[in-house]
Length: 196
Image (tube, rainbow, N blue to C red; front, side):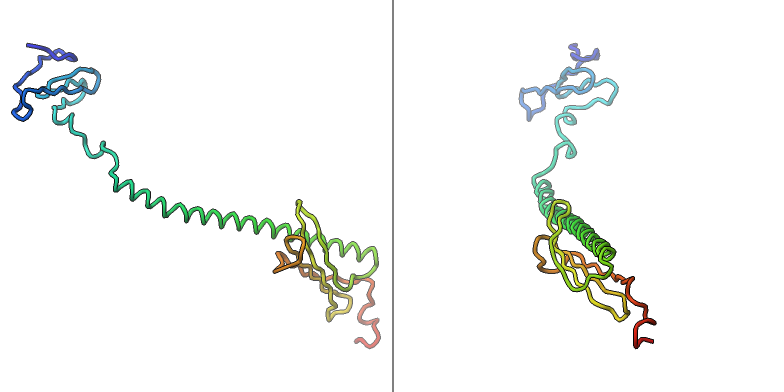
Protein backbone atom coordinates (compact mmCIF):
# COMPACT_ATOMS: atom_id res chain seq x y z
CA UNK A 1 0.00 0.00 0.00
CA UNK A 2 1.39 3.47 -0.83
CA UNK A 3 2.48 5.67 2.03
CA UNK A 4 2.07 9.40 2.68
CA UNK A 5 5.13 11.48 1.85
CA UNK A 6 5.20 13.04 5.29
CA UNK A 7 4.39 10.19 7.61
CA UNK A 8 4.76 6.47 7.86
CA UNK A 9 1.11 5.45 8.01
CA UNK A 10 -0.41 3.92 4.89
CA UNK A 11 -2.35 6.26 2.61
CA UNK A 12 -5.96 5.39 2.05
CA UNK A 13 -6.81 5.89 -1.56
CA UNK A 14 -10.50 5.87 -2.28
CA UNK A 15 -12.49 6.27 -5.42
CA UNK A 16 -13.21 9.87 -6.37
CA UNK A 17 -16.63 11.28 -5.58
CA UNK A 18 -19.04 11.35 -8.53
CA UNK A 19 -19.07 15.16 -8.70
CA UNK A 20 -15.28 15.42 -8.95
CA UNK A 21 -15.20 13.06 -11.87
CA UNK A 22 -11.75 11.55 -12.20
CA UNK A 23 -9.84 14.53 -10.83
CA UNK A 24 -8.34 13.96 -7.46
CA UNK A 25 -7.51 17.02 -5.42
CA UNK A 26 -4.28 17.26 -3.48
CA UNK A 27 -4.31 18.98 -0.13
CA UNK A 28 -1.32 20.87 1.19
CA UNK A 29 -0.58 19.64 4.68
CA UNK A 30 0.06 22.26 7.31
CA UNK A 31 2.22 21.75 10.33
CA UNK A 32 5.61 20.13 10.70
CA UNK A 33 5.54 17.85 7.64
CA UNK A 34 5.10 19.61 4.32
CA UNK A 35 3.59 16.76 2.36
CA UNK A 36 0.31 16.24 0.55
CA UNK A 37 -2.47 13.73 0.96
CA UNK A 38 -5.39 12.75 -1.22
CA UNK A 39 -8.70 14.53 -0.79
CA UNK A 40 -10.36 11.50 0.67
CA UNK A 41 -7.50 10.85 3.06
CA UNK A 42 -6.32 12.60 6.17
CA UNK A 43 -3.68 15.30 6.15
CA UNK A 44 -0.54 14.36 8.01
CA UNK A 45 -0.12 16.81 10.90
CA UNK A 46 2.05 15.95 13.88
CA UNK A 47 0.99 17.04 17.31
CA UNK A 48 -2.50 18.14 16.34
CA UNK A 49 -5.81 16.78 15.11
CA UNK A 50 -5.99 15.40 11.60
CA UNK A 51 -7.86 17.57 9.13
CA UNK A 52 -10.02 16.21 6.33
CA UNK A 53 -10.08 17.63 2.84
CA UNK A 54 -13.22 19.66 3.48
CA UNK A 55 -11.82 21.21 6.64
CA UNK A 56 -8.59 22.33 5.00
CA UNK A 57 -9.95 23.70 1.73
CA UNK A 58 -12.76 25.86 3.17
CA UNK A 59 -11.63 29.09 4.84
CA UNK A 60 -13.45 30.19 7.93
CA UNK A 61 -15.18 33.60 8.20
CA UNK A 62 -12.51 34.86 10.63
CA UNK A 63 -9.72 34.18 8.14
CA UNK A 64 -11.52 35.78 5.20
CA UNK A 65 -10.84 39.46 6.08
CA UNK A 66 -13.22 42.41 5.94
CA UNK A 67 -16.11 42.78 3.56
CA UNK A 68 -16.54 45.86 1.39
CA UNK A 69 -19.45 47.05 3.55
CA UNK A 70 -17.34 46.82 6.72
CA UNK A 71 -14.51 48.76 5.09
CA UNK A 72 -16.92 51.46 3.85
CA UNK A 73 -18.48 51.82 7.33
CA UNK A 74 -15.03 52.14 8.89
CA UNK A 75 -14.05 54.80 6.35
CA UNK A 76 -17.29 56.70 7.04
CA UNK A 77 -16.56 56.70 10.78
CA UNK A 78 -13.02 57.97 10.16
CA UNK A 79 -14.34 60.61 7.73
CA UNK A 80 -16.71 61.90 10.42
CA UNK A 81 -14.26 61.74 13.31
CA UNK A 82 -11.19 63.23 11.62
CA UNK A 83 -12.61 66.75 10.96
CA UNK A 84 -13.92 66.95 14.52
CA UNK A 85 -10.51 65.95 15.84
CA UNK A 86 -8.75 68.52 13.64
CA UNK A 87 -11.21 71.23 14.72
CA UNK A 88 -10.53 70.48 18.38
CA UNK A 89 -6.77 70.54 17.78
CA UNK A 90 -7.09 73.89 15.98
CA UNK A 91 -9.07 75.35 18.90
CA UNK A 92 -6.43 74.20 21.37
CA UNK A 93 -3.67 75.78 19.31
CA UNK A 94 -5.63 79.04 19.07
CA UNK A 95 -6.21 79.00 22.82
CA UNK A 96 -2.53 78.41 23.48
CA UNK A 97 -1.57 81.32 21.20
CA UNK A 98 -4.06 83.61 22.91
CA UNK A 99 -2.73 82.72 26.36
CA UNK A 100 0.84 83.31 25.18
CA UNK A 101 -0.10 86.77 23.81
CA UNK A 102 -2.04 87.64 26.96
CA UNK A 103 0.94 86.69 29.14
CA UNK A 104 3.25 88.88 27.07
CA UNK A 105 0.75 91.76 27.28
CA UNK A 106 0.73 91.41 31.08
CA UNK A 107 4.52 91.66 31.09
CA UNK A 108 4.42 94.81 28.93
CA UNK A 109 1.87 96.41 31.27
CA UNK A 110 3.92 95.44 34.33
CA UNK A 111 7.02 96.98 32.75
CA UNK A 112 5.18 100.27 32.08
CA UNK A 113 3.98 100.37 35.69
CA UNK A 114 7.54 99.79 36.91
CA UNK A 115 8.72 102.65 34.68
CA UNK A 116 6.07 104.91 36.23
CA UNK A 117 7.25 104.04 39.73
CA UNK A 118 10.88 104.75 38.78
CA UNK A 119 9.82 108.02 37.13
CA UNK A 120 7.97 108.94 40.32
CA UNK A 121 11.14 108.45 42.39
CA UNK A 122 13.29 110.43 39.96
CA UNK A 123 10.84 113.34 39.54
CA UNK A 124 9.61 113.34 43.10
CA UNK A 125 5.96 113.33 42.00
CA UNK A 126 3.31 111.36 40.15
CA UNK A 127 2.90 111.36 36.39
CA UNK A 128 -0.35 113.07 35.43
CA UNK A 129 -2.26 112.82 32.18
CA UNK A 130 -2.06 110.18 29.47
CA UNK A 131 0.58 108.70 27.23
CA UNK A 132 0.84 106.01 24.55
CA UNK A 133 3.57 104.24 22.67
CA UNK A 134 4.93 100.98 21.32
CA UNK A 135 7.13 98.56 23.26
CA UNK A 136 9.02 95.58 21.94
CA UNK A 137 8.98 92.26 23.72
CA UNK A 138 9.78 88.76 22.47
CA UNK A 139 10.42 90.12 18.98
CA UNK A 140 6.98 91.71 18.60
CA UNK A 141 5.53 95.18 18.89
CA UNK A 142 2.97 95.91 21.59
CA UNK A 143 0.97 99.14 21.59
CA UNK A 144 0.10 100.56 25.01
CA UNK A 145 -2.02 103.40 26.39
CA UNK A 146 -1.58 104.92 29.83
CA UNK A 147 -4.11 107.10 31.66
CA UNK A 148 -3.94 108.53 35.14
CA UNK A 149 -6.70 110.17 37.15
CA UNK A 150 -6.98 111.53 40.64
CA UNK A 151 -8.96 109.63 43.23
CA UNK A 152 -11.12 110.85 46.10
CA UNK A 153 -8.21 110.18 48.44
CA UNK A 154 -5.65 112.92 48.25
CA UNK A 155 -2.17 111.75 47.23
CA UNK A 156 -3.49 108.63 45.47
CA UNK A 157 -3.77 108.27 41.74
CA UNK A 158 -5.49 105.61 39.63
CA UNK A 159 -3.34 104.33 36.76
CA UNK A 160 -4.79 102.32 33.87
CA UNK A 161 -2.50 100.69 31.31
CA UNK A 162 -4.01 98.99 28.24
CA UNK A 163 -1.87 96.77 26.01
CA UNK A 164 -2.73 95.78 22.42
CA UNK A 165 -1.10 93.29 20.06
CA UNK A 166 0.61 95.06 17.16
CA UNK A 167 1.72 98.62 16.55
CA UNK A 168 -1.76 100.19 16.66
CA UNK A 169 -4.04 100.48 19.68
CA UNK A 170 -7.12 99.12 17.90
CA UNK A 171 -9.93 96.89 19.06
CA UNK A 172 -10.13 95.51 22.55
CA UNK A 173 -6.94 95.35 24.58
CA UNK A 174 -5.31 92.03 25.35
CA UNK A 175 -4.66 93.14 28.91
CA UNK A 176 -5.71 96.06 31.10
CA UNK A 177 -3.74 96.76 34.26
CA UNK A 178 -5.24 99.00 36.94
CA UNK A 179 -3.04 100.16 39.80
CA UNK A 180 -3.01 102.88 42.43
CA UNK A 181 0.08 104.95 43.14
CA UNK A 182 0.65 107.13 46.18
CA UNK A 183 2.39 110.49 46.06
CA UNK A 184 4.65 110.25 49.11
CA UNK A 185 5.55 113.94 48.92
CA UNK A 186 1.91 115.10 49.02
CA UNK A 187 0.81 116.80 52.23
CA UNK A 188 -1.19 114.70 54.67
CA UNK A 189 -4.93 115.32 54.90
CA UNK A 190 -4.53 117.08 58.27
CA UNK A 191 -2.09 119.57 56.76
CA UNK A 192 -4.32 120.53 53.82
CA UNK A 193 -6.21 123.75 54.50
CA UNK A 194 -9.96 123.18 54.77
CA UNK A 195 -9.60 119.45 55.40
CA UNK A 196 -10.80 117.76 58.48
